[in-house]
Amino acid sequence: MPEFEPIRPRARRFRPGLPLRGRARAVTAALVVAGAALAVALPAGGAAPPAEQPTATVTVADAREGPAEPPPPDELVAAPVRIADAEVVRLLAPGDVVDVLAADPGAAEPARVVAHRAEVADIPGRDEAPRKPGPLTTTEGALLVLTVPRATAAELAGAAAGSLLAVFRW
Image (tube, one colour):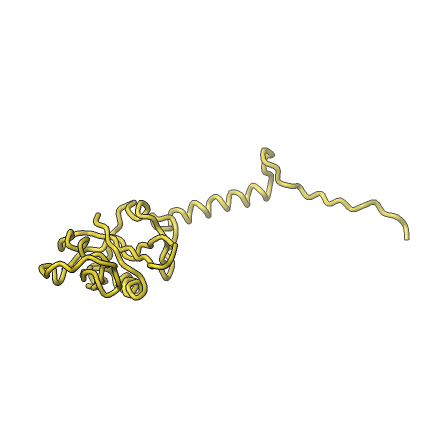
């Protein structure tokens, strides 16, 4: 068999600084137009909302950023939650806006925000005698009724089952 010279394809590799030619320029222009169309079509948050909102771990500083739009009134429900520290609940009044944080007592993970900007609807048993101070358990604390969207109420119920809940006021 005769010897042949090696085959060297004439593929042009992309190098920054070289001008784009022909088809590469058209592909680049199409990608830029598609990106601009997506940026205009998506909501102000910059991304399409997922079907199910995952619970993210956020710090208190992250939770306080940006105004949140209230959901439509027909989707709101009253959700009773037991807050671990009864004395903190005594500082609240109906109409206050709070964030609810869930912390697992034995975990080293930071607390996560379960309900963002929930309105306090009622504080049952507000005028009862104060309880004796001592170590917190899941049965102690104070009851708080919050007005939240239906999906957030389900998240609150799930978080209350295995975590201690705390609030901070806006």
